[in-house]
Image 1 (tube, one colour):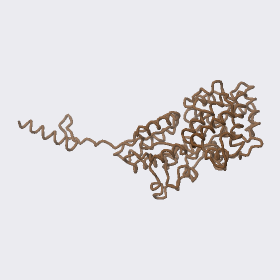
Image 2: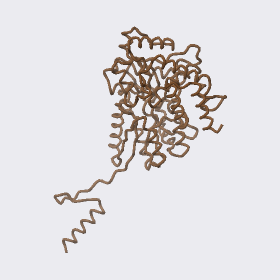
Image 3: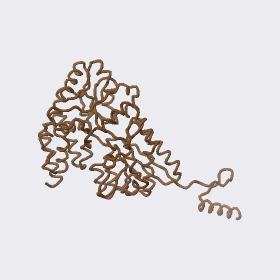
Image 4: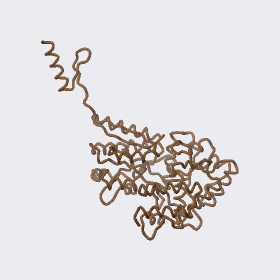
Length: 431
């Protein structure tokens, strides 16, 4: 009976205190379960994942009662994944966005935390590039933190191929077409392109719109002002210029079915099959992770001007905060979630991101790499950075743009595609 009574006492101690006896009858106190924060990231095969992992490690080290579950999701699957999370009310605590229409939708349904008080505490917001912060700021507050990168679309090229063929960086579209012809003559693919998900080819279309008509053409059409319309002649002309490149054989065979996430376009540069690639400047980080010996071969130039066009040739396509990080309103620990974000872009992470080939969206980043310095120069001199159409537009219109852009690359009549985009837009806004 005494043995049974003693066993019951021990059991009560275990239950109440969370302690247990080890094999040598030594009383050991178990650790209480840790609180969890879920973090989504979409950096793909990139050394930035190591930066994120280090930031998470340092956060957990300083916050021992917390465990961060970091889920790495492929970029092109992410939008669908997040849509499912919204629909099932199972949002991650911290997640990346591109700002634009999708973030606005989350704000409208109360899905994200207003970070205004956190950003203004100790004047923390002054750390960031003003243009970057403006992309997630409205009259009601601040809805995300610029973290990953300032990224613009530029033409990257293989300097060895250009030097061997005595090619110079083009200033005009006509000069670019001459380069395409010369590369074709020497059996090189002029432009690497993997356009299965369409946003990659859309960069050509966006630049043509900007160079022909200037930023106001898209702004007016997207925001339904000043009689703007997606069947404007500028959009039709942009589609015709896409056709011109396709008909010249500027892209690899089967490009509309090739996968960007799988590296199909980058590999054409790595193996010296292609001469050029129009890509966001995150490409540099990809190279430094996947093929560091290729980094010395990379040259870069802005998308060229178009004769008679209204767009400033210094204008760029891109974002000054790729990606921003937001906190879901369902998060049980918003203070700690914001603290986690700060670790992702603190001084240690900032330096590591620069070393990984990124340009952090902070004021005056300390960049030494000549190629990254050159890219930063293009960012600083750009009078207008046009946000990616597929991120700027509401989700329904974004999907329509990508579908129609890809169809143009596949041979669709540009005028018909422009008229269809305008029709869908009118239906969306009940016009």
